[in-house]
Length: 335
Ligand code: F1P
Image (cartoon, rainbow, N blue to C red):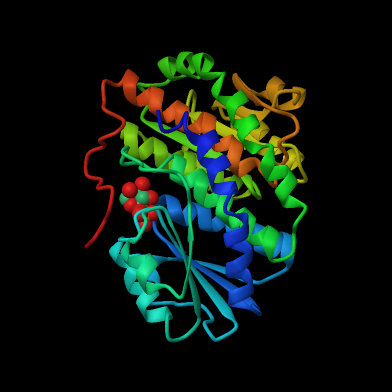
């Protein structure tokens, strides 16, 4: 249900444009960005790094909240430290926020109204995802991404807004393919390992795809930068190991394709995720998930995650699990 609510979660979040402009004005000059978050929110932050550095040329750190106390990046009064948290109550994220408040400008991007992070950060932006019951984050992830894209648009890349306006429609199209994904899930619910690979904007998507798989199916899923495979993990690619290759149209496409050839040569079962008109990827893949050709690499994180969430959901159901209540995972980690 929550995956199907993603188009409206993005639409509702896009109505926050005036709030985003207001916060950007309040914050003033920024020379550096430092994202701090955990889990899925950390993956949203990684997309933020590609956006801030690639589109605006602002140096950006992304720090796991649990590591912040050991290495806090370059904080000063011209650094904007952005704390991303669905709940606004995650202990590691709150501790980092408290430590950063006296050293940098702080902004919390949060889903839960009135939560601790919203009271403690200097500036706040809300994701308008509505309540999320499933423990593994889905619609809040795409809403977090939407706020980050809007922030980047407001800080110097206004052309992004037109493209964001079309994202809900691209997501709706992706959701229509659910039957195909259900069939695919039925053929790979008994494997022990999965790999997810991507480059550039597709790299955080690979990490988040692997995290969803681990969280709700208990299958070992590894997200890797496609170009890193040759530095070790290729040794694990054997006959029949599913490799989800995420390759939207864009400058990384051909290089990712060469990584697909490498894993295929070692017997991997390639699940290609690309533009529906991408014949080269379709040819190399055993299974293919086609998305709207107008979704390029820059906005791909918002759309390409949809089939990956659906895949994990259906693998979970195939395995007789309850995807909404994964074991050993709390909706809000307050310790
Ligand atoms: C962070 C997080 C979620 C995950 C689960 C446990 O939460 O790792 O990404 O899905 O709910 O906590 P938050 O700081 O974004 O609330």
